[in-house]
Amino acid sequence: MLNKFHYTCIDCGKTIESSKVVYLCDTCQKQNSETQPPYGVLKTEYNYSEIRARLSLVCGDTDKGDNIFNKLENTGFIDILPIKSAQSLPNLKVGNTPLYKISSINNTDFEFDLFLKDDSQNPTFSFKDRASAIVSAYAKENNIDTIVAASTGNAGSSLAGICASQKQRAIIFVPANAPKAKLTQIMMYGAQIVPIAGTYDNAFDLSIEATKKYRWYNRNTAFNPLTIEGKKTVSFELFSQLNQTLPDKIFVPVGDGVIISGVYKGFEDLLNLGIINKIPVIVAVQSTGSNNIINNLHNKHFVSTPSKTIADSISVDIPRNFRMAKKYLLDFAGETISVNDVQIIAASKTLSSNTGIFAEPAAATAFAGFLNYYKNNKLKKDSKNVVLLTGSGLKDLNAVQKIIDIPASIKPDISSVEKFLSEKI
Ligand SMILES: *Cc1c(COP(=O)(O)O)cnc(C)c1O
Image (tube, rainbow, N blue to C red; front, side, top):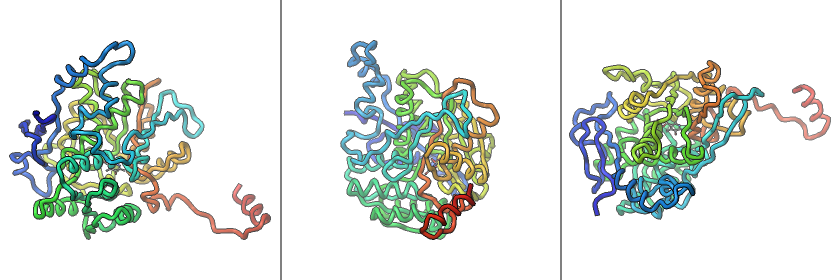
């Protein structure tokens, strides 16, 4: 049987067989340097016309909802995933996260629909599990038992957790100053941690050097093309949860640019299968303290500005999927917005107190982008807008300490309670 998928290089367009592990296009990666986003990231492609023809045959009465999308969904989208069988996936519940409709904030009703896709509900509490699950399943099918990743924290804690569930070995390179909860997760899941006294970008480059030296299998975001394939599954879910309609706008937090490319890729697969006829407007949201994708979108030469932001998960100097994210944003008229740390933390509080969802700063960044559009009347009446909430607030409690004030304790008697409450109200 022919391989069910192949890769194409997003820079030179070359087709690459998927029969063995590949990361970057061997021609384009020759020009890579430490100061530039890598060339040669691969896009995974399927035989869309064959899949469409095959599924159309098994579709009976289309009036009964027996359409191609339903057929794909019934088998967990396996036809458009880079693995042989859904059995290879972890038994933890990855993806299929809730989509909540929110109709007001601060007692003001919206004139549009807002949906929150709560990906903090993944097993390790971040969106990264979508990518780890596919990479881990691929490793399992190919008898690979050790997987390495560099991470700002979430990809590492995700890989560690998913590998624990799959009886695989994980080795995680992280900046030593990653939030404690994320480091703790990595340790608790029993992975080998390699803390680096440096930035995420240092950890990334080192992990690749070690991968080559020790011949490990590497999950680094974008470097391993299957990470994009895992992340695209959110778009299938959104289409399904919105009763097979498209949202008008999707606000996505952006660091390396893999989640946003995954969101685009999911819709692009549906487009290639003739299931949808356009791609929604995606709004890339970055922190002003680390907006190397937005800053360079129209530049001929990429120039990195060192990152400093509270949103550690999107604090990236050299975005590893810059070229693909840029291509998608330009090809499909994506929009961009940067928000600062003060806005991010304020948005985090607004989100939590209005919805009961506590998101980490990177995820609150997407919500801050939405709030900016809302305040500036940039959302059309009756439009459908989605915010991707990519990680749990419990992963970084430090980030929000400065806007909350946990009161000093009081004596355990009712008069103290009374006094305390009267002072507060
Ligand atoms: C990784 C991550 C992002 C950004 O994803 P990229 O693919 O790096 O752009 C956003 N939010 C959270 C919580 C993350 O962990």
